[in-house]
Length: 248
Image 1 (cartoon, rainbow, N blue to C red):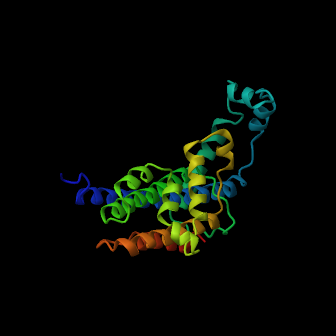
Image 2 (image 1 turned 90 degrees about the vertical axis):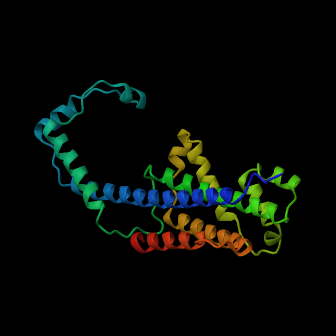
Image 3 (image 1 turned 180 degrees about the horizontal axis):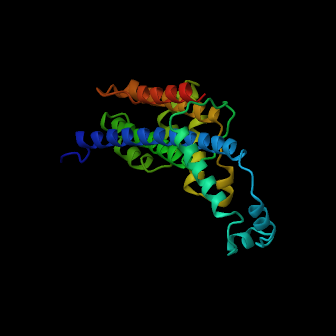
């Protein structure tokens, strides 16, 4: 009987890996540009002085003292239309400037922009897709039998990786601590609870450490597979170098 997983399966998994890695770093670039736009906007906003009418509206505003009262308040914005328009124009200007301006963030800078969700989700999908492809390769090359493959291929991602690299982990030839951190962060995006929404603000150095370990893991896959294709480790390295060069 013909195996249901042939060249087309490997092709689709490779296409998926390419899509996820491209999307992931598209979102990290957007996240950092959002951070920059906020910084620029804050500096522009410092130069805006409230008018007498703005102060009067603010003094007469009654929205309650609590969060829920504020959210439910039907009070208008405590600013004049002219001031709101000026602030809106400044924000649009900040976005425009951020699209071309270069900026160096410190490695300890914490990213809070919502686009971070896209980066972490897609990077996790990237690693999971290549892990799935590697398990299929190990099965079809006779390294693991069908029984083991049917069980491990549906296990949690870290269990799959521990199974693949059990010998390397024992011999301390590979580390998975940053991969664990990646999937811990991704779980916060999948389960976007109030606590996780506040806690999700990794440092740039945290992400760089994750990217570095992802590259080493993918290189391990490639060394065994020897597929004649563009190396995903090189794509990942290219993206990592771009972020470090352009933003740090």
